[in-house]
Length: 584
Image (cartoon, rainbow, N blue to C red; front, side, top):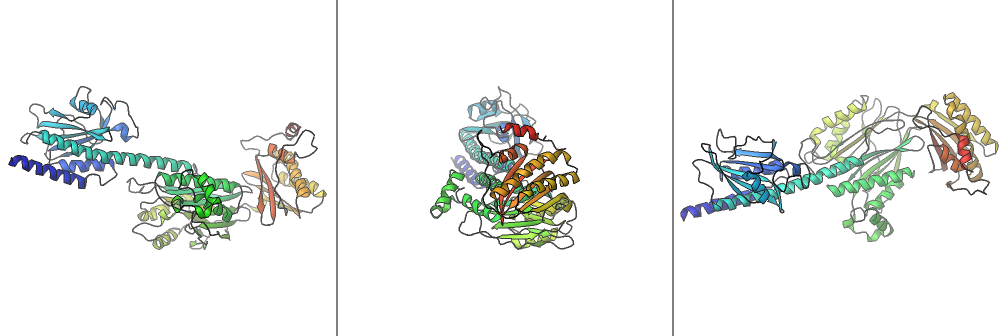
């Protein structure tokens, strides 16, 4: 009776110890080692934990799971006996090795039936018995724990078997939770990476380098994915939108909200809205991202802003900048984000004074715009707070360290990014990092043709003459006929429907862009002309012959533009005569 009471007290102490020590981490291997730390040597002399390899790889039902023949990976081993590297099954399996049990073995039988089995030790061996205990979590077998006792120890009894099942079950639940967490983390990371710009973004008049690091990438420990993102969006007129944002919160929902915001940013940017207007529209959208329905809920919140529930709001910070490669001017608008950093040639780095505004999703406050002229060769850096802030480093200290790391901006831009990340590596904590750097390379003056035309019919002919002369000077003779025809259409439209003086501008970079400016506010609208109509086919012709076209508002009117690929590009040009015939 005294021995039974002592055994009961020992088992109760082991259960209490297990409750306190198992499951303190969301790491699979760590949880398995915590189980072995509890049972060796207090319960057994040797122990191992094997987990199904397919489940570790993310498969829901790997082949062979039902019959116990699926591959397992040994994730933990513990021994209180020197010179005993094996368990009672006698299989030389090292930690990290992938293996499987023979179909007729007791270990495979334990996995099939989800019931513990006693495996007798080999004659003359060190181990006299082993308990093979399936690890069951939520009615699913996730692996096998083996507890072995050597000669000289008491054999396993019914009470020991019940205790082993309880210990394995507790560890199995923790391991399954860690597995599910790891799977969600990996899916969120895949989703987030799929939403970031692929490869190295390109932009007119900018040399760009970017980095994204998920939280705890430096330590290798899993962490919930955040909502950091960046984007580089090409705009008409060889302009570029640079965007960096951070959705507050973590996990899959934050990554989804980030994806919706990034999609909305691209849509709004391509509408060619001003930076402050883009953020205002994003603010309305962000107010509904936390509720089921996403963008639809955001639309309802925009219609009834005062009725929006704060629990449905996903807050986010964002900085949106539009760079014009012709004027080298950059217009910033900020929604609660950290200030951009500018490094001018020969000058120390400084943080630009861009009013931060309120985060997206708060609502009610307008956003301000700041326009800055960027000198040739200047370096512009946009980033998220994960780069400069952590638990051990306050924000001000991190910002100063970041500014101090930009001491040699003339180095290759990729090297500058690597230097910043290496220098601020000690600041990298649980938060994600998004870093976007751009070096200014304005469009050369010889790549711009700019003329002002009076408001008179003769301006159409003059526009054709200017266009032909400029394209021949650029050695773009194959584009002359098409460009002349389209310029005629746009200038004619400006004379008929626009106001004030007309401005014609040709821009040569990776493509040819033609812009026609006037003071009218009415945007052109493309329509399908009927067979009996004498006119109305001008914009249809522009759409057929150009790679892209559109219009945007300007502070003093509007601009209608079209874009053509260069002759040595991959896109072939449409013959103007064929395009004209297709309209009739």
